[in-house]
Length: 235
Ligand code: FPP
Image (cartoon, rainbow, N blue to C red; front, side, top):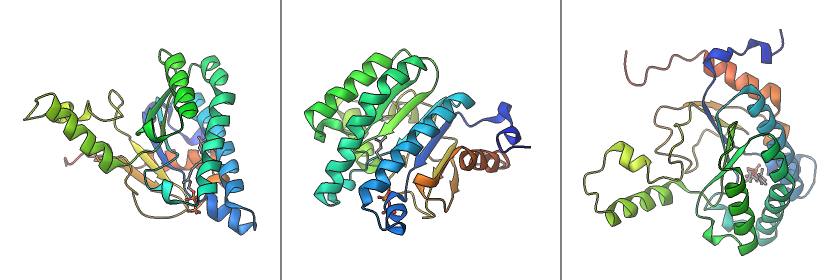
């Protein structure tokens, strides 16, 4: 039986979030510049988005750029931005064709004007799409998001917010919380990602580097997830 056939389609995670780590190590192992690792990382993004849609996953959140990533060498940052721009240009048509709804989590005001325009166009043109929600975390940091939500609540005069009020002030407003968080490349940490949203999320860490991650590795994560006993704090 193939790995895909081992997945219980009645118990799929609704929302899968991924920390796509290891592009740099993948390149280093091959004595290639880091940006080649990111270029191959984008190829994995395309494959996994397509596979998640075919599996009928509802939401896929990908951590593409953190608030801390600006501290990387200038040419690496600009290389990632160029990859992002090329990705948006080449994938918009494909998203529309496949009913993929594109969203962004993060403060995009720090990105260049042309990338902001591309992002807004993609969000706008796909907002009514009905298959997978592809939520790209860009210039995203969870602490920044939580502070933003606090300021937002204060400005609305909400002094005693409910959990729902709080969730509604996050970038992920309206999305279910992730059921499964995958981190590639072996590191056992959360790295300021979706701290509020992952309260009850199952975490899966694989040693596979992001450019080597593929459909089978994604299946393994889902199969592992389906073996977990999710109690949400109950017995
Ligand atoms: C982690 O690898 C990866 C990133 C910080 C960026 C992820 C970016 C992409 C996959 C490309 C941009 C995405 C899109 C959708 C256009 P790392 O560099 O931290 O790897 P390392 O820990 O091995 O150095």
